[in-house]
Image (tube, rainbow over the protein chains, first blue to last red):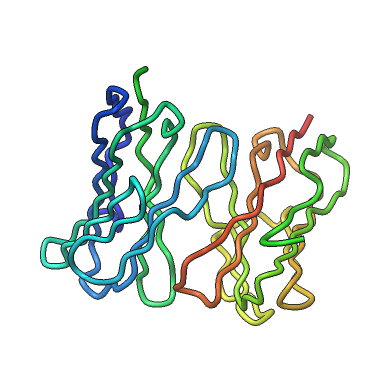
Length: 109
Length: 112
């Protein structure tokens, strides 16, 4: 099992709908979880951090964490064409951050 | 300057050249990283420095040589590169290893 797994996509979502991005991880000891957004040709940008079970909301973004099931998700409400990007899930393992390969999200106008 | 800066932003070099990439972080962080990202590929971690000490080297060819003179600066020295080394080279920093990372804008490298 890969340490951090994401569906590569592309995930196509109509403008205005909710985009749901999922990530699973293998290390039960992981305590910190991050979502990055990366536009084509640009560097990753940290958009959400979550450390405890449940939901964390920031504007149109909601991160959800379920440690028992070892998954973390990112919801984007009222999706906009500017949300089209690759979203990277990152999880800490011991003293390292492990990145997933990313999910390409395409918002359809 | 704020955040993480990288210079140059674009670099074209021949296979026999020697060049260096520079990264500087203005966040007071203790860890710095080099990543390689080829077109439409995932991030590949190359090197990790913590408090100026190299703590990870992910089987990177010796034609890539990192240097971390202090906790704010990181260099990647390049020599006799191959065309397949053409990629986006990203620098990142974090408060410590295992914490969230902040990325610079990257250097787009083309080897001819």
